[in-house]
Image 1: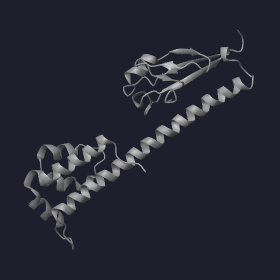
Image 2: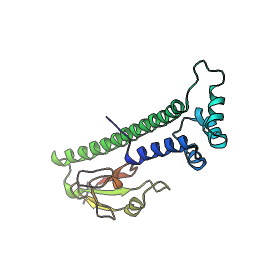
Image 3: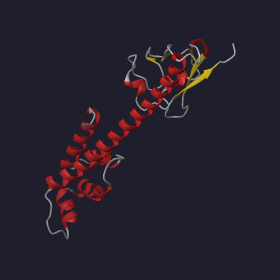
Image 4: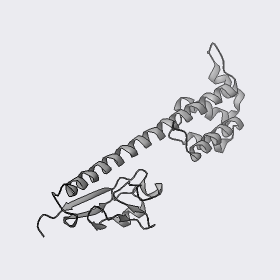
Length: 192
C-alpha cells in the first residue's frame, strides 16, 4: 500500500479547504499544481471569481444529474489525490528500479573479486554526478570523488556513507538517495 507523503496530504487538504471557501489565492495556487485535473480548471476559476453558486450553475448546465458543491469539490480533490498517488507510485518505482540496477552492478563487481578474477586493490571507483540544475549540491560536491576497492564507501558532505549512488545500506538519508541520478564509474587496473 502506498499513501501520500505528509506534504502531499497537506497539499490535498489545502486545495480542498481553498476550494470550499472559494479562496482566490488558494484556488490560484491549486491551478498551478501540475497534478491537477485540468477538466475542472474552469469551474475552479469561476468559483474564485463569482462564487460557488455561479460555478455550480455553469458546471451543471445541461447535466441530467446536477452536482452539489460538496460533490463537485469531492470530485476535484479526489482526482488530484489520485494523480498524486500515481505520481508517487511512479517515483518510488523509478527510484527502486535504478537503485536495484546499481546494486546489481555493484554485486557483479563483488563477484569478480570473490571469484578471484580481480583483486580489491585493482578497483577504483569514482562518483559521477549528473551535473545539471536538478543535481543536489552535495552530489555536485562529490563529483569525481575516488575510492579504492569495493568495500570503501563514498562520503557525502553531510557525512552520509554510500557504497554507490542511491545506496542506503550504510544509513544514508533519503535526502542523499531519493531520485539520485548519479553514476558510479568503476575502473579495473589490470596492470599495476
